[in-house]
Length: 109
Image (cartoon, rainbow, N blue to C red):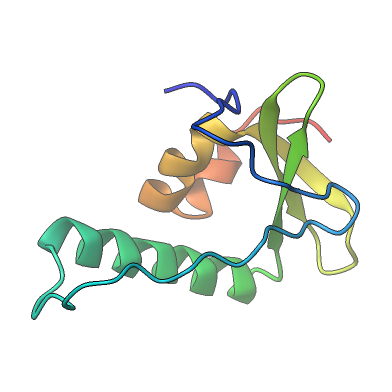
């Protein structure tokens, strides 16, 4: 998996200053009766990581560099200080391992 920002059709207007993406329209069609199990597990893991980060008083900020076409994840302290900078490809590890993934990280601010 790469952390390059690859175009898929039309470019998405993203403001690095505000961190805003435009709102997407909901897909049309019937709503499934049950979510796929992989999606449920992924949502559970993401919720656990969000809880772990909140408990550790940490936050994540995603940065897109349009010149290099890369996305990075900044791990912030409650004061807003950048503690770690991770390539976006490490997001899966962060979701799988939670804050324990940061202990083994070499991401320097």
